[in-house]
Image 1 (cartoon, rainbow, N blue to C red):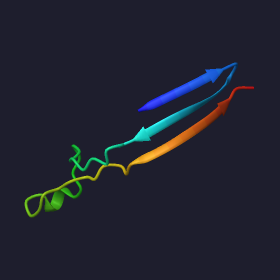
Image 2 (image 1 turned 90 degrees about the horizontal axis):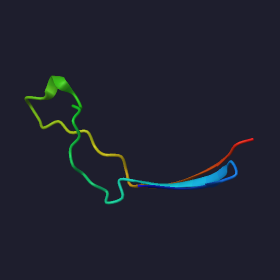
Image 3 (image 1 turned 30 degrees about the vertical axis):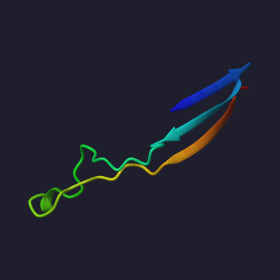
Image 4 (image 1 turned 45 degrees about the horizontal axis):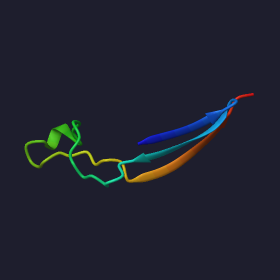
Length: 57
């Protein structure tokens, strides 16, 4: 999710990454040498909320 407000070269962005704290698998492998021994998963990014302020001079 992303929201942005800007005016006259200044503004702010608000973002949320993984808001539901999902644990589903991604398409990459953790260690290809142990794939037959155990299920390989790559964890999602943690739930994150942030804000970016910007200005153009």
